[in-house]
Image (tube, rainbow, N blue to C red; front, top):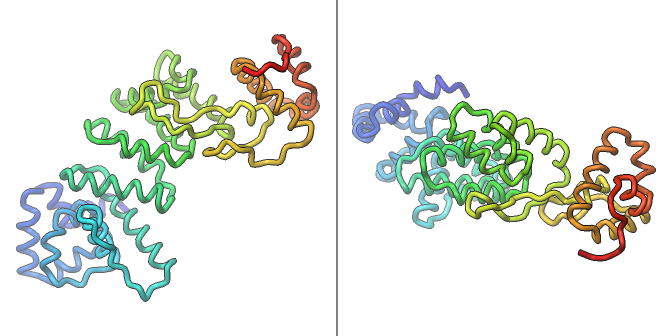
Length: 327
C-alpha cells in the first residue's frame, strides 16, 4: 500500500501533525459528518496509532465497525484488560484465524514505529510476540526493525529480542547483520554487539568488514546452527546459536531446536559420528570445517574421504591421532 496515500488520510495527518488535538478534531468530525467519520475509521489506509488513541471514544459511539477494526480494538482491550476477542462464531476457524492474523499484522505494519504511551508499547509488544510465536508468521524482519528502533530510542526491547531469537530461526541473524551497514552508529554498533558471539564478526576491524565476515560465516554454517536459548543482549557473552559440528562434519541438516539430524545416517557415518563426538572441541571445529570446505569444492572426493576412519582423516589434517578418549 502506498505510504504517501496512507499519509494523506485525514486522521493519520491529524495524529502526526497535531496529536494533542486529534480527539478534539475527531469529536468535531463525528458531530458534523457522522457518515464520513465512520468511513474514515474503517478505511484500510488508517494507521493503528489513530485507532489506539481514539479507542475509548469509539466505545461510546454506535458505529458500524468493520471486522478488522473490531478485532484490533478487542485485542487491545485483551492485552490491557484481559478481555476476549469478539469474533463472529458463524465464520469458519480458518476464516477467523486469517482475519485475526491480518488484523494484528495491520497493527504492527502501521504502528510499530511509534511509542505513544506505556500502554501502547505493551500492546505493540504483545502483538509482535504473538505474531511470531503464537501465529508463527514470518515477521522476522519487522521484529528486527522494531528491536533496533527501540534500542535507538532507549526503550524496552529485551522481551522482543528474546521472542525473535525464540523462533530458533537463524534467518533473523541476516536481518540483524544488515544493520552493520547502517549509516547510524547506534544501529551498526548494536548489530555488531548482537552478532559478537561470532568470532569472525567480533574480531573484524570495522562494521563493513564485519558484514562480509558474517556473510561468509552464515553461508558456511546456516544449515548447522542450533538455538541455545541465550541472548547476549541480556546475558554478557551470550551465544544464541551454536554450530553443530558433527552435523557440519557429516553434511547433515539438523533441527534448529533439538540439534537432531533430519537425514538418515549410513552405517559408516554412524561409526564416524560416534568417534567424532569423542574428539576435543578444537579438533571437531577443525575437522568439520575441512569437511564442509571439501564437500563444497570437491564433492566426489569428499564422498570417498568421509567414509575413511577418523584416524585417517585427522592424519590428513596433520592433527594428533584420535585415541578414543572422551573429553
